[in-house]
Length: 309
Image (cartoon, rainbow, N blue to C red):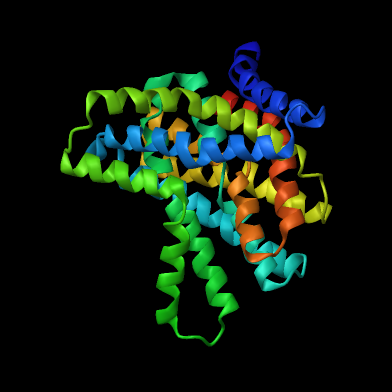
């Protein structure tokens, strides 16, 4: 038990330090926003670019890994969407945003550091393969479904430009795309540039985790308690359980299986609130899902770590 807590607690202590700093006024909102902009628009894209540019694409991007993880993600999205609509009678637009909360696990800010602390840096290749298409896949699903619902009766030909514009306005996706470009072309990265990128990479996760704590402070628990509970149950239990089943059927090797299940077991990411805010729907529920899901995941991630081989 103590070994598992040694893996999880440091990550949540950094988040908690950011939360406490914001609570005590030591990290005002403009500073939190600046820190998160640095992390999400600069440091984390550098991390993704560096990881993907050096990744063995043939070895890591195999259908069993991606099919298992994203099969579970789609199951979570459908459970959240239909649960919000059929059980809680939310409007369709709200239901899509709630489904997105169940789809988009915090693969980057929580999944990477927890996997690294649990199994070491060499265990992250499958995580990076998942993360490489995580934002494009999730935004592609969420935006497409939302635009179909909002433009009932409109021509389907008008949807792809909207989806692509929303996706490629995201710095994380640009970092991913550039990493693939360097990897596939074999273009060399000059030594000083590579060293500068490594400096940014070392700052990425600590800055993002501390900033995440500050962001979570402003998300007071509000909204429908039952709906928030559903988001937490789908994100923290159903998604990883489906990935566990699919990964077992697909015969994933131990390292890929661990990465897929752990990544699926992470709480909803801040992007779920950003998605809801972009469309102006279900913002309170999405924000509360991030906050409460992150707190509850301290216990659920411990359980998944204990169960994993």
